[in-house]
Length: 311
Image (cartoon, rainbow, N blue to C red; front, side):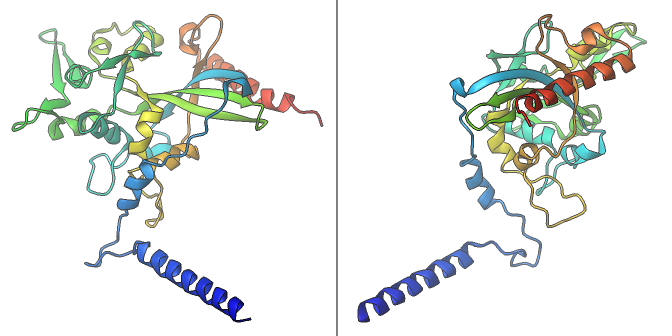
């Protein structure tokens, strides 16, 4: 009887110390100065432990690559666009990408020439990226192009940094992202998955776009808008360290990584992998026909999973 009593006492003491330790590690809602605490310490550790499902090649019996557009003008995507000017607490998705690239080691990749697909074997250096991120405007009087660089050398360290002067004007026209997504079926878990493989910022005022003829086709204009590509798995640690701007609930603590994993954003289809290797804009111009084709592809993706089962 005495032995059971000792064991119970040890368990109780152990539980008490674990409870006290858990209470001490919990971060308070308010800082000591009375301001609302924005948790960052836990985010740094979370970024090093991002969960990834490693699907076996033999278990993937079907897959399809699709390209989608995330439009910042859609109300559901406002949290990715704001704040326009970053502060100590929040940054936009685009600013997270810039800071991770020029202040850290996030790699940017080039696209295939005369196409939009990423070229993973071509990593862009920070010096070369200065020519990619710039505001281009056409001077009709002198028939020249005015270029305002977004990335400038620091006055002291000479390292590339984001220009605070040009940034506000740049983000006004940085309203879309292009994502490359893989939809696949895993027979081991008997369910469909979707995974973002890469993401690219789109910008309208590139040097090629401002020199294109006004009668140019939509595909050429869109193709020139793709700046560069980022591998999403390489970007995720930076997304996990940054909270999105709360929407109607200031106590909301949602990171960009959670925002994408739970697919809180909205998008629309640009195209998919097909025999002709063409996107919708390459062979369709009528908006009604484009929407009809988008609906057809989305229905095919949905029906594939439904047709696997018999009821």
